[in-house]
Image 1 (cartoon, rainbow, N blue to C red):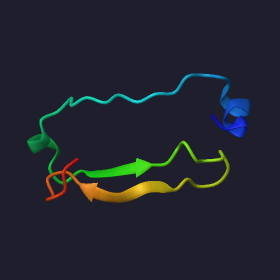
Image 2 (image 1 turned 90 degrees about the vertical axis):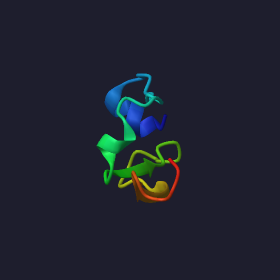
Image 3 (image 1 turned 30 degrees about the horizontal axis):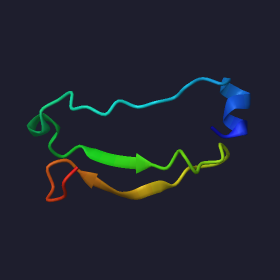
Length: 61
């Protein structure tokens, strides 16, 4: 993690959950974004790894 982040929040472990908690039919139309936290310095806005998409579109997620 970026030093600026750990200075503010401490050396906590951050992780996400990679599992399907809902049926995709119930999430149709919800926008999904992929923030690039790995390369974020902790200052200013972060960038995204790829373009956002909507669940239920032709793209696989």
